[in-house]
Structures are given as structure tokens and as C-alpha cells.
Length: 621
Image (tube, one colour):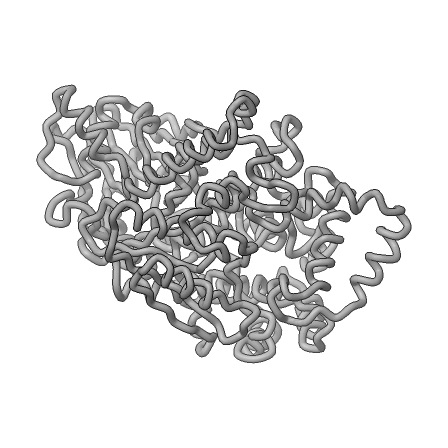
């Protein structure tokens, strides 16, 4: 926290200490605070490397620079060696001091040397300038805001900033994003006066104000790769992936891996075994509803790779979990897979402090079903327009769909496909699936919402014309859906339990390799993640290689007929404190769902989470 005006300096130390208390779960091992004129830093530490030293906030030997850092620099040993050859001398064995030395030597260019997940801030006493940055893919968060009288504050979680003199009025635009996409796209937050630094961006803060700049973007497909044969590309991928996994095994505390039994997590565990990690711990979660349960597949891969496997079966037994999620996510977050992720992280933390995951593979190597649907759309659109637009659409909308996992429901899959066709017909750039469409969002607001028409996902359309339609979808997911939904989900759920999660697919070298690949190596016919399946065909059971994508989903539709039923009625229908959302529309969706004609489970979850968050924020502040 920084006050260059001198008006709030006396408030900084107690405010920073309070913020540290709010973030105790992220760093249960140690707390550190540091104060200088007009500046206060606070840090909660989860000790992973160099357990006895590397305390934060950290100053350099000259005391000109002070830093706080969240995350891991995986290539810190290689960086340390280079810096030592240039004259730096280190007194700790961890990555924090290496990061600080890299900034001192290279300035903002240090970001080009970092392979890791991070958000960090460095105060330069001499220049009176703050430098802050976030990693390329946005694995680690960085929230910031500035008050009208010159107070600048930042934090790893939004809720730690409560009580500061910032503008916490609700952002209608962010609310539209949430209802449409299920998440709020950075740099926006639910509040008008707080922003989130975007992935691959850094900022400078000084008396001149805030300056934000991008330092990296994923590359575009490289035509020269067409000259390489498939075997060469497979070998290159395997080498990169093995290197990425190896870097993420650096730890001074117990380490394991999530294992769903799907291709991505199985690849990670297989690579860990190949690197000599014989005592590999793997973790999975299951459900009694067999259409959602993957535990049998995880068990099969564990037996094949000979891991020490732990699994738990979770049902939504207590609605208290909703308010746990609300508290730790800090703003409306609509992905119901946060529920199993929360349970998985809690159970995993009982055994290890670090877990590797397969996050990112779907966005990089074409794993989602909607990519396949987009390819199939070109054939579908050859059907007569009357048949597509009137007969099929009308038929689909009048068939009951049930509450099972969508891959087991032909009606659900058909509805999603017809929705994709309608969305792209109206706007070819409207490629992201929406929980609520434009008209439905307008109906949900008591008064007309801002910009309810148009796609809310921004910042990739200007360059999408050079891409294959599926590549445009993948790039949008990589830039927005991955950091603002998937990585947000994992960060909050894992850090709530003091667990660090690392994904080898998030290695920027692997990301650049994948982005350069022609589409045919990712989606061949209707086979997703083609290159990955070829690369690991000899390392995993054939059932894992051939297995189709199964999302990390929960039977939320069924839960709204059971444990979530009363909570929805109490929070959304009877105890509604969010008067900008229509009661009648919230009731209509609920009644349609209860009658069983339409599975509104995910929509009801968005509304329930929104109202629970609103009540929590205003009643517990």
C-alpha cells in the first residue's frame, strides 16, 4: 500500500496488517510486514522452497528496493547461476531473492527471463516508483485500486481490500459479463474502483499516476512448421513437456498430482514417473451420480502407473460451502466446478503441499467439444435454412433434457449446438458460449443493462481474421476463459487450503509451441488433442489415450431439486437484497427447472452465487 500524498500514511501499517490477516489462508506458515515513509508491504508465506530463509517482504542489500512476491519462479536455479556470473551474491537459497536480483539487473525486461507463475511488486525508494507484474498466463492474481485522495493499494485477493477508501460501487458492466460468461473479464472487477492487472502486463505507479503495459502475447500459427514432419513435432513436444514437468517438481515440501483419469492429468503423472518420481501421490474426487463420476478412470491410470492413489466421494451435504466459496472468490464467480475443485484441494492438502495439474491442455491443444462442434457446423449449415432455423430449433426447445451430465444427454448436446449456430449466425465474432443471451440478460435486469447486446469477450477480434475459426475460439479461451475462469477457480480453491497447484501446460515455452502449431495437429477430423494422443500413446493405457473429454462438472441441476432448493428460495426469492435483478425472471427460471423441462442448473447457480455474494459483502463487512 502506498500513499505519496502524505494524507493517509499514518493508516498504512494497521491497514496492511489487517489485510495480511485476511490472507492468512494463502500463507499459513509466516507473516511479514515492512514499512517505509509512505509505503507499507505485507506478506503471508506458504513455504515451498528454502523453508528457513527467503522471508518476505524482502529488501536488497542496499535497501533501495523492497519486494513482495506471490508464486514460484521455476527456473530460479538457472537464473541464479547467470546472475552470480554477473557479480550478484546471494544469502538465501530460494527464488524470491533471485527474482529481486533479476529486477535490479534488468528492470522490466526481467519478465522475459522468468518461467513461472507470479505476481509481484517492487518499491524503488530512490525513484519513488512501484513496479508490479503478473505472469504471462495469469495463474496468479493481482488486484489494485486508487482512492480519490491518492492512496494506492494492491492485493492477491479482492476481499482483503475491504475497508479501504476505494470505490466499491457495483459495476453494471461487470455484472453483465458475469451473467453472460459466468466470470468477470480482467481488468474489470465487480467494483468500479478496483481493477485486476491482466495476464502478461506490468504497471508502474508513481506521482505521475498509473501506467500499464503488455510485455508478452501468445504467437500465431507458424506456416514454417508445416515443413516439419509429425515425428519431429512429437519429439519436440515431448522434450518441452518433460522439461516443464521437471521444473515444476522443484520443491522442499511433499508434492503430488491431481489425477482425473483424463488424458491431460494422466500425461503429467506419466511424465513424473519417467523423471524418476517413484513415490508419486495422486488425488481424485468422485460422485455417486455415475454420469458425472470419473473416479474409475483415475483408478485405472493409477494402477497402470503404480501411484499411491487417494480418492474421496463428495456430495453437497452442507450449503455452508456456498459461503466459503463466496468468501474466498471475493466477487461473483459462476463456474460450479469450483465445488469439486474445493473438495479436491482440501483432501489433497491433507497429504501434500504442492500438486501438479493438467490445466491448460484443452485451450492449447483443442480439447473442448465446442471446437469439434464448430467444425461440424460447416456441414450442418448445408441443411436448408428453414429446416435449421424453424423446425430443428423449435423441436429442440420443446424437448425435456433432464439434469444428467450433458455428454449423456443427446438433447443437451443438440441444444448447445443449435445455440452455437444461432449465436454465430447473428454475430460471427460471438464465439463464447453464454449462460444468458442478450435478451435474457435484458429480462433479468429490472432496468435496461449497459451494453447487453454484443459479445462481452474483448481484445482478440482485431487479430482473429488471420485465424481459422477454431483457432479464433482457442485464442479467446487462452486469453480470457483460461485466466478469468479456470485459473481463477484453481487459485482460490487451492490457496484457501494452503495448497500450491502447478500446471506444466502453463510453461510459456509450451504455450508458444502449441500456439504455433497448425490446427491439423490439434484437431484431426473429430479427434481432439491429436498430437498429445500420439505423443503419449506408448506411456498410457489405450483407454486413456482414446477417452473423450469429460468436464470437471457436478450435478448442480439435481442439487437444485435437493440441498440447494431451500437456499435458492431463501436467498434469491424470499431474501432478495439485490434489487437490480428481476424477481419474476428468477422465479420463472426456478419453476421451469423444478418442473423438469429445462435444466437451468448452471443459470440458477449463477443467480444463487450472485445473491449470496451480495449478502456476504454487505452484511459481513
